[in-house]
Length: 351
Ligand SMILES: [Zn+2]
Image 1 (cartoon, helix red, strand yellow):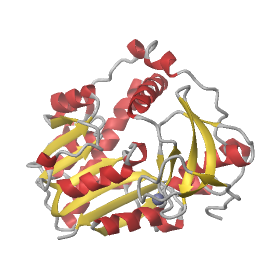
Image 2 (tube, rainbow, N blue to C red; image 1 turned 30 degrees about the horizontal axis):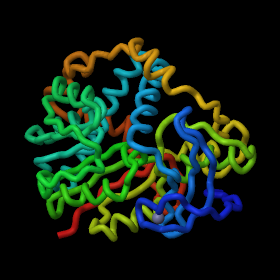
Image 3 (cartoon, protein in one colour; image 1 turned 180 degrees about the vertical axis):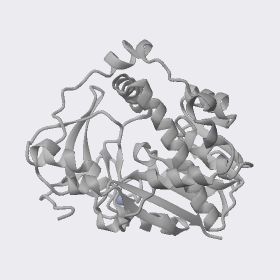
């Protein structure tokens, strides 16, 4: 049932694949990123990566990201925003505990696109001496990470290479970032450079087959341009992503998809109309970013306001039990099968 496919048309790419340089592609969907750009989603014949062609530019994603941030924050209640911080902290605790159980003791961490910083804060509950550096283009994100957690910050796109960071980190984390980056090839090469030999790279990213499905339905069955509000510009194929990481010089430690509920509900295989992506309305990015930015009230981010005190002090086992109960991935599937909602990976740099 997974990955039922359509007869995708062959297309001439405007730009080569950012992962493998391939020129051969098939058309998955026509889509519009806000009112910013009409583009297509194409699948690379060589490596399986699905991505926008033509790709968005840096300024285009900046505009769309800000609009999405404002739109999303306006529809998420402050209480729910705080819950998300707590969840990310528990996920960090659980992930760190897994590393520790495997004998890893990272001392230096670089997190790309850290958001609120609560995942890394959770890691530090298990590894109290962990030195955390975060990288983001958004100065507000860096400010909050410094204020709330004391993390060092680097203002940069993840595509830029900083030679001063080479071989410095035991662990690089990119959670829900890879699907957003314009040049995925450059980002993965940078991760490789920044890690020490033997260092670990952890990421999560949506299963591309499921993520792109709604756009394919709109294209193939509705013959219309779909609406793309969140800048997912890369849609990963589980097999191709793994092959690429191995070619770069990584070895797989853990690699699986989780979240099978969405597959059961039909994403990735069913043609039900409710799964179709909305038709593009060329929604105005400016309407959110410029006109409503002032309405976004930041929630309190400080650890003592967000986390119960027993999360941060005392024995760790109650927190571990709760975290495993809430966020443990007990059903794991090989990403090569293209089912499940999210791909979880830990890869080790060879050498
Ligand atoms: Zn490719």
